[in-house]
Amino acid sequence: MAREIETKCLHLEEEEGCSENYGAISYPIYQTATYAHPGVGQSTGYDYTRLQNPTREHLEKVVASLENGVDALALSTGMAAIALMMELFEPGDHLIVDSDLYGGSIRLFQNVSAKNGISFSHIDCYKEDIETYINGQTKAVYIETPTNPMMNVTDIEELAKITRKHNLLLIVDNTFLSPYFQNPLELGADIVVHSGSKYLGGHNDTLAGFLVTNRDDISERLRFLIKTTGAGLAPLDSWLLLRGIKTLGIRMEKAQENAMRIADWLLGRKAVTRVIYPGLTKHPGYAIMKKQARGFGAMLTFQVESKEFALAILEKVRMIKYAESLGGVETLITYPVTQTHADVPLEIRERNGITDSTLRLSVGIENIKDLLGELGQVFDAIERS
Image (cartoon, rainbow, N blue to C red; front, side):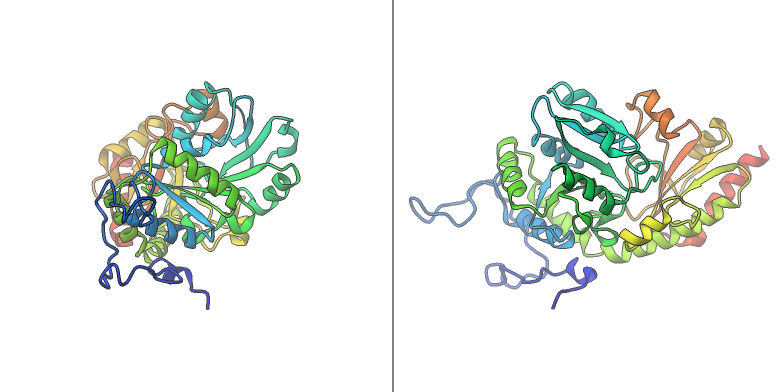
């Protein structure tokens, strides 16, 4: 019988290695660089940790199970995962990518991939006709949904129909929703990207990245590339991710509950000019989210009346931390124009509506009374000054 996702966060369909691991409930950390061979031409299945490590392998099986893929690769960071994925392409190839993406992804595409002869069309994938941008060199479409930070929602299933028609790869960054709320492979994607530093790890204490696929040919190619480039996740970090994933379900549910309450609260403040959260029924992607996801996540973006008001919020928050990143148990507030999207060209930021009054919240699992209490104190203090 297939297990529910909460259980899959804790247990593989078939637990392996019990005898070798002495029945350990917490999967061991195999902190070793190399492995002894039983004899000439013989192997235990592990030769060198750059190639594979039991702790990392166990983590990869868990993540592959959560995303319903045939394979998952664990890498040192989310950006390492995207960089490895880009090695699937060659000089002269063309990719269609969402215009609203994490700034680090855009920086990689424009400063590394472009140098290597790969070209890009940055478009609004959630509303534009993808087919008008496809040419003879187009090899893939790369999206986030919801996007970072403007929360645009793309219909993955409909987009997959187009990519299959033109024999293109569909790559989906699923970091914001995690496999707990959304499974792009089930909707037609070929590769799923995660920054494991975020919701999968869940505690702001380690970095990781993942590539997950449901295609054996892509898995084989990625395995060759990770062996060659050497950015596999270390054993201790793999263990931290395994530990974090165990509570993924309860963290996502609580953080989402808090995010909805905060979104409603922000709608009632005069200084707030826009609240962008896909769980709000007025969000243009609400119906698509209801169709393709099991939840709305805990990321929300809002805009206030002025740059000065935004900066004042950042200066006055205390329990809510002014920090980069997202997906941890603590609530973080981020200023995209100087943090996550500082290296994104101004014209792209302006096109996406990212202004100096835009703030992004990664809502954590604190008591909602404390979160709303701090926000209320901060807003009241600014409005009185």
